[in-house]
Image (cartoon, rainbow, N blue to C red; front, side):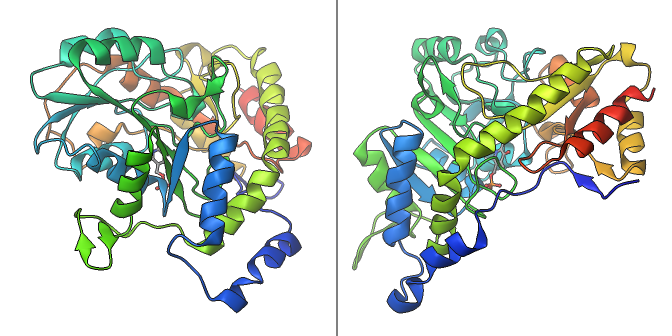
Amino acid sequence: MGKPIYVTKSSMPPYEEYIEVIKPLWETHWLTNMGKWHQKLEQKLSEYLDVPEISLLVNGHMALELAIQSFQFPEGAEVITTPFTFISTTHAIVRNKLVPVFCDVKESDGTIDPDKIESLITDKTVAILPVHVYGNVCDVESIKQIADKYDLKIIYDAAHAFGVRHKDIGIGNYGDVSVFSFHATKVFNTIEGGAVVCKNHELYEKMYNLKNFGIRGEEEVSYIGANAKMNEFCAVMGLCNLKRVGETFAARKRVYERYNNAIAEIDGIVSLINKGEEMNYSYYPVLVEDSYGCSRDELYNRFKKQEIYVRKYFYPLTMDCDCYRDRYKKSCVEVANYLADRVLALPIYEELEDADIKRVIEVIRSQ
Ligand SMILES: *Cc1c(COP(=O)(O)O)cnc(C)c1O
């Protein structure tokens, strides 16, 4: 047996490069509060992601919470979302005192099924909050049509979709607002971090205040904000990682293609990745279908015995977690349940070696 293999491994720049850039911080002592590197990373990211403006935050979750807060929806209003996601998506809605209404997803890629949205709309609905899960692009055109028809806001959880493009523009341009995560486990990281894409300067200013206690001036506090600013050490990490992001994607693409070729010959194992225009290879989720011959959990345990720590992303559905079970109206999420019971995310990261990829594939083959 080889060394343990985990589902991901954080990208890091060369040590010397990072140290070189943070060195001046020992002279300026400017460690946080929208410093030089925070500004520089905002500028670089708005270029890279091809979006008008972007506001950096301490993590993706706070970015999502504060992006929702910026709309000032009335307490108890309903937000249509999906349960096939990381728990953060649902928490961000509920922590804003809004009610999540769970919509089913598409079997092909796990994103919200636009055909099932309209029947969930009530006079309390204010927004749709879809997730570009695994970097799979939601059906942004149909979602927009529905939102326009019923005058709803669209808030995208784009935590998985860094660098993804659709119809030749950055994914962050869709919807009223999009939120990214730069957590250590994501395809691009700032150690911890996140961002809100701003369509206009007004939203940028609002996010700037919301992440800094709602403070507008020395003697002026206009919003009930939080403290969710990104610090300089994280911003520098982001700048260093951003330089190498092309290499990161290329290295991950090699893994992705190796897996694609291997599973093409294995009955009952199918990829949940939707081959979009420009993808980021952030995850490699597969479905263990009934024809494979053993269950997802059996395969998971077989991996574990080989010290390969694959993950059940996303099981359980957020609506079935203890804090939410039986708390909200039941809607039919048959497909989400189907996926949650069969999905397994395989290891994918820049430094995953050929021998490791082979070990992963062997476990799936050794039926
Ligand atoms: C990671 C993630 C978040 C939260 O981001 P953090 O930076 O970890 O706070 C939100 N939604 C989804 C779908 C995620 O995967």
